[in-house]
Length: 490
Image (cartoon, rainbow, N blue to C red):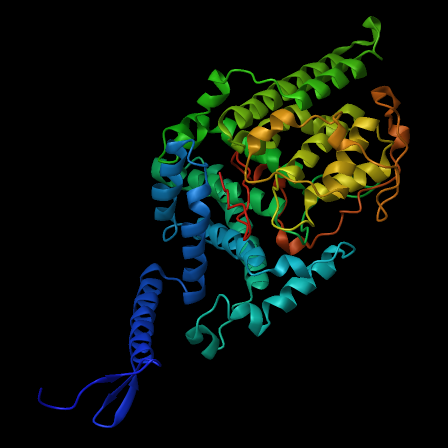
């Protein structure tokens, strides 16, 4: 053999004419250079920064495959094929996706371990912002190019900014729908913008830990009502119902055909039966002569809300498909929300049960979330029945959550079973409520002892006036998690 021999050593060094080369390093540098070219070119074509392209890729690769748990293929097509087409044409949709992507990356990078139980929303925000600036966090997500250029790759700041601008864009889209001079094409674009964006914005509020909005806000005397998740849910229902035919005829129309609710066979769910029994017990305090138009409306609304709750739970049990349970709050907005705002005891209790179930189903990125805040606030301000206390101790104090995405386990979610037994005064971080042994009639407005401590949010994160109508959509997602569960956005 002519010429020098190649000498391959265990260190993967190659010697050629006395000069040693690291093959891994050489090919690694070549691959990195090629990747940088592709990444930069793609970002330029889409009009995105490299950071934004990374977030978009995370959302597409990790979150989108879990939109429907592979149960509803029609919904999957919308999110996998149709929605990505709006990233370049709709700033509000792009910003909403980026906000959700930034938020869901945080727990993947282990940032949930930095949040302490006793932190208030301001402390949570400061902690997440500071940790997002650390090299240890940024090197797990950013590449050398971004860090060398000094790009702002702070996930917390970007998530907040993207959310703020997306909300403003949604509000503008809704305002445009009021213009009678819009062409059919312009109206369709504005309607899709408002609907898809508010899908993600409602989800963002439920998932994020620094509590820009509470689940429900009760204004003090003389105080102006503030936006909350209930107002967004009501706006979503109003927008969808008012434009249902147009939405169903659009390219995202498959999201608004709810055949599952029409044809699902009822599954026996003990939790639903318990709530139904509690409603019947609550109604026993009304005599026949007391049932006026207001009481009759309340009874009808609660029956409707309970019927939809039953169907949503049945679908979860039958198909291991919790999507409709997450949709429940926007779906029952007109039936439930007015009674919650009026502080009707059973309506408040129903929302409490639902919030606990959202915690159990892990509809959050961090254990600090708006669902838990409402549950804790309700427990501190109302005298709980034994049913509510057992729920609280098992889910909130005991931190028992759904395992392995087995939502069929809701069938066995029996609050009166042995696994829900608890010892009094287990919780040291909240006051223990007085048990009423299941007496629903013990609830009254006299038990209400103040305004929600959740009344802390920055006005720059919410839409301008008219927030009751600036949202649209009907789904609630499950977040991507680094450990066992994966993201869920439909």
